[in-house]
Length: 70
Image (cartoon, rainbow, N blue to C red; front, side):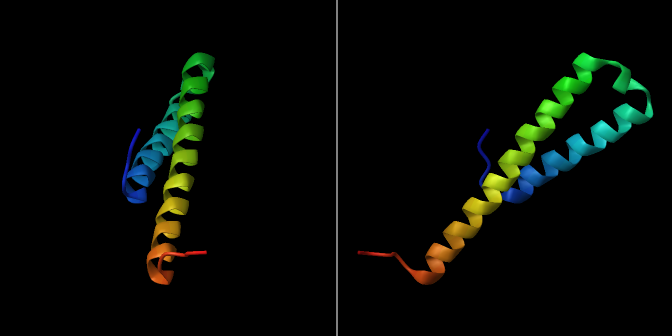
């Protein structure tokens, strides 16, 4: 999974959250295997989103401050 833009990761995460809400609303929360997989995907994509945002901000900060030499 490689994304350059945190917005791409966030879009995927939002789709999974919508899927999760829909699954609950139609009773799929009674399927423990499906729900466990969906929740695992949610956790994975949430971590990816956080990592992408932190990386993007670190790169922006590095560009603004210039290369640190020491």
